[in-house]
Image (cartoon, rainbow, N blue to C red; front, side, top):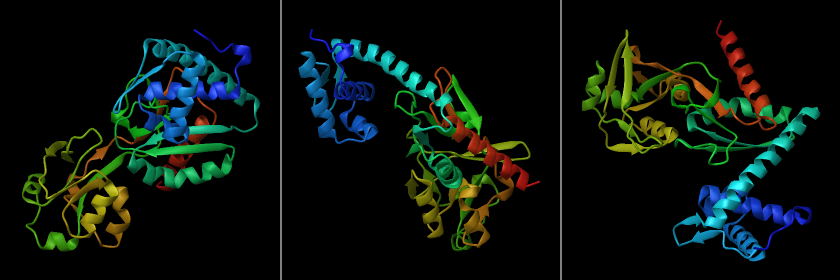
Length: 312
């Protein structure tokens, strides 16, 4: 099999090898193209050129699937080791810089993006202009390592084991809310079970399951499977529908604080609002932190400390 001697590897060779590795890892030209920031056709052309230069087919392609050949799987395994070493070597250089530089890829829940990143990311970007940040807002449970992310943000009780997790928010209060017009035109709600006779805005979670609403009062926990004419998978849209008098929405209190203060929404069953685990940023513990990630974590922790102090 023709090979590309290390001493003769060009920039294009390394780029094409990296492109192949992204496709093999994600098993998708479309997803790999998005990750690499190039068009799908350009990515396909790069991989095809690599196969021609090597004289070996690396990927099996059909109209719906992409999978490595035996040769492709073997090459990907060794390339992963090599590129990990290269990434580690480049990250180690950061210790010799006055300021971090590079690119961070983050996978973040929509609630975390709206409540935390809109507040703390702008000052971080201003403080570290040589660090670029890509934020993928996604409520699905993603394998951040397999998908090529440096870190993720999730609720503290949903983070997989074997990751380092750092708390970046206070504990979170969840509430059911509705517009005054809706509440005034429907039966009074006294107990969580009363929601079974209301028009609730159902929530389909990232794993495809319709969320059962949690309530807690004086140590007593209720989990209600609510009915509803409307089902959404995005908090902001659900809130807009509640504002439009279309039913009761369940979300983080902080997402609707302004509407509650202005009287546009009211909390349903306020004595039953549960306090749940806070947001955490998490990342693999077996690899060196990429440049900028430690500083980003410190920024969130500083913001958390200032937020806590302001309430004293």
